[in-house]
Image 1 (spheres, rainbow, N blue to C red):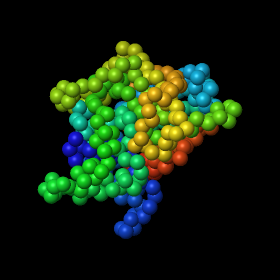
Image 2: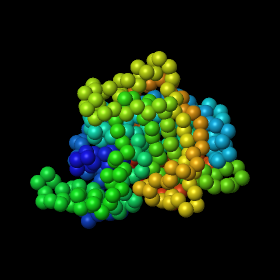
Image 3: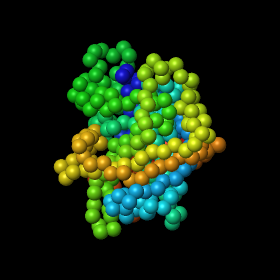
Length: 326
């Protein structure tokens, strides 16, 4: 993956750093959103990252096992209405869907709870994050900025990657799907489920399709520029699309605060329920401008773990939202 493509994928995740102030006097969150705008251009009314997307609607019905893990209202077993948005990475709203830069793809799901509140899950097709901490992420972005095409070898970026093998490892897990409906999505952050007995369990989310279909790069590059955005509404005309929401359960020795460390595949995975998507929103371009998905927008029975990236991501999304909706 080239420096540019990796930079696009990183900032496309929408992750930024803890609130801090740089020498220039601006909060670091704003500094990084500004850098996204410099990389991708300023597109009024659009997200600074994951700018290109499509909004759909459906419902979620939890499994009995979910209620045993969490007392959250979305796991009651009743049908919970949802609004979801699938997206490409980067802040370029006309990016071809088959571009490498469009990986990792994202999905954000807003669950509309019976009491009128919402809770969100924001995940993507990366299985783990490239770096462990906000400080490392800042160093990575700095290294990218200091590695222009004519930079002496090894560049600052190459030096960083050589000392952080999690960077190429993370992006080695992504590929272009033939449909948003045929992609698997993972939560890089840990959350804590609390059940009715007060028992606590750290989890990471998985949202898995009925089948996974990835394209070869040469095939993806030949597809129409908007093939993912156009394919999903056409598919939904033929019938609903379903995903299985699952929770990977952490063991006592698993880190819940390091998003660059995947938990062993041997860890138990529990089905939380089925997400059924049955229609595309006809005015998706307008609707998505007013939608704000926050990974830290939780409900009783789901709590933040000690992973600081949850609040960090929320801060970045809020900055981007305020700019597209002044």
